[in-house]
Image (cartoon, rainbow, N blue to C red):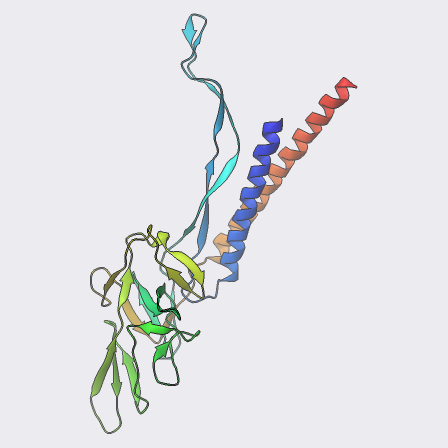
Length: 261
């Protein structure tokens, strides 16, 4: 019965983590470029009461006797499926159709990665994120530019006053990872690389497996509200079932104590 208590307690803790994950997904349903998390679990160690194949009398047991000791949290996996692209009408908004991340220079000079292409111009005309971090490689739009055009291949061209042609002022590149699940989310729609993600593979959009860019669009979160609501109900019922196991084990222990009195 004590094993039942600890196993049920681990199940309740696991479902609490599951609910925390689901709640975060739902909270970010409107966050541009957000990737849903999925809680992954593993069974814990087993106590072997009798090993399979162990001699018993004149024969061997065909199956052993093991008691599971509960569940543990294995990981919180990012679901890197494509989010829908929504037209915004702002030429500086850029959605990625396919694989890859924008590269962002953080204040300390390190590079972070994002799927959020809601870029704006700062006071000097440089393309930056909503937090003011520079797009990498840095691209600056002339202050007298009449229009800005971002191509599917990442070329950034502007039209200057009195000119009938466009002039290229920069090139947006994308970074791909062998294992994007290994990236670490640091908030502000940013990820950083780790040993698990591998080094970035940088190329122009449309090359080496990278996706293409869609100017005037933003990528929505890939969170499915219906799926998350179903997952929430499942987590709630699993939590209730584990709490019922705790209650039942407690009643059995109480009965055993009363028998001795």
